[in-house]
Image (tube, rainbow, N blue to C red; front, side, top):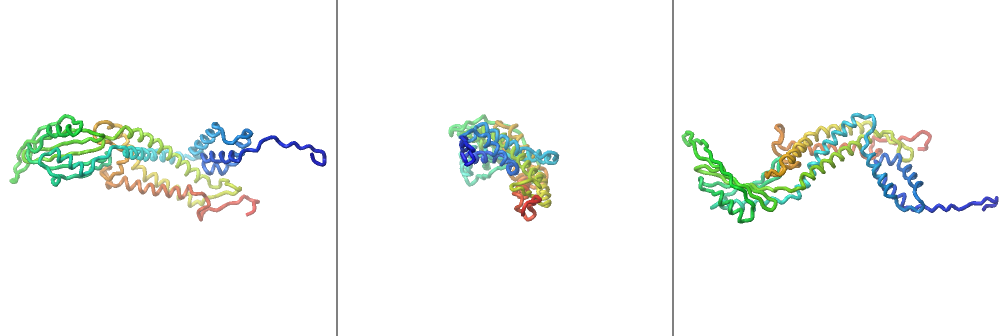
Length: 384
């Protein structure tokens, strides 16, 4: 009671825990930064007023609502901007292709390792009599479509230089699960020293075996005077490949859309109100630079994305066929993927596209006011 006789009753409302506001602000990070700058204080104030006495942390329902609303806001595109939708759809498709490639690369890390060149040479010398390591050539086989393989080959003399059934027995004794021998006979024409064409017998022999996640093919092309035997070894892959391609593709699509939404929001955000009542107006040159870089990035990354989708289709179409594993990310392996351009075209386009994307991020997503072009515009009547 004061001197005038007025009675003051001390409020029984408990003091809120200081950690509650921090928890709400932490949940608000699910929203885009510009949205938090405009509405963050209002949202936190409202949530604090609605909090129960003595509440120390947000309820599960509150947390879920804030996070879900923030994520939904991040996916939202500016209204009345049809080009923003075009850009977002293209970014979604490109991101899906790159995400599938990332999933394929991740799955390949779990494959059984292919034997090294020394082990591959040893396999061939054990299957071909009277062959030494000095007469065997070994090379790595990489293509834009398949996982890599090791291949070894050696020359033999005549039709009797190699016995496929004996090689099959040796593989079985060494723990390989060997299939039947495929034997096809035919003829071929060759030219002698005088240029006369002669016909000679030609045999094609092959068999396949598998052990511990690795497959091999032993084959030979045998003529009457000479022949060549080869061994090709590759990983059979595992069940993680296709699910990771799908998961990576979906994650890439979401990431592409989110990136496009963030860029379009930022470019449209010229003149939006920020903390303290000031407004940040990015320079027009910076906005047009970001748009131009974004268009160039989409154009540059489109062709590699098409290659990734084509390899994804192959991975599903030929899954489990017993041949080399079709992967998505191998589209970046130098080789004749397209009927035009150099073999490293996909790799060069990806490198250039990523640099252009980085330029978009620098031009559009850095906080306004950090560049020399940006300036702070104060509302009328406020002191500078």
